[in-house]
Length: 262
Image (cartoon, rainbow, N blue to C red; front, side, top):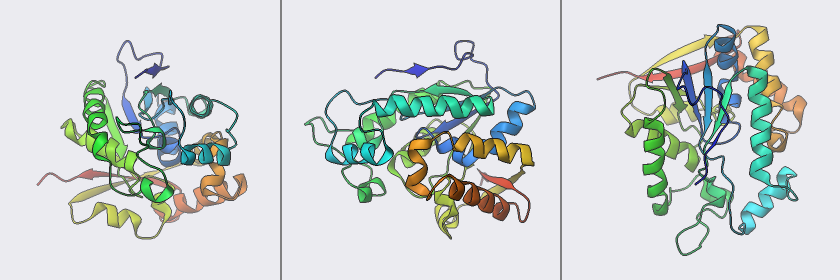
């Protein structure tokens, strides 16, 4: 598995905050405002995308259909998406780190069978064959700078890759901050369902207009993904603003969670 590491400070191991992103857009969609505020305050912020690698073999019919829908049928889609991510994080001032794990739409069993072949499979059980990935992902996360605050997906929406990243982070035993996976978090009741019966402490981070604008501008860099969730860019902007205002009770905000020690 190839590691694409483009953060200039990786070798020195310097980071104040490390955000774990299952895919090439999740952190910007969910945490872009806070990232903008932190960079403005002089912090070093890494956004580590786990599933940023590209498949070496043939694509499944499902993966080909998604590439076509994204407008990336005639390109190296993972490479194109990594470029979108670099552009987005450059606007925020964060440093991209791209790991070579495969998105679930590309993963195959040892016998060559595609593991996830439909939209329904993306939200279904995690394949037994992904246990090896989970173990390696846990090791990679454990090696991230110990001095950095680690922020990971809550798993709202139950996408298999989001669940794997959260589970791997929890296996390390490190203290974690959890972010609400947007846009899934915008669906009524989804956050509460994900939190379940555990003891959680929320943190609402108020965004000024500059931070919110930076988040939206960065989100718009993921052009291949916009119509997966929104009608067009204007619809994206309207939904980002509406959800941020809802979370902040009238003021634009993002919300984070920590587990309360029992």
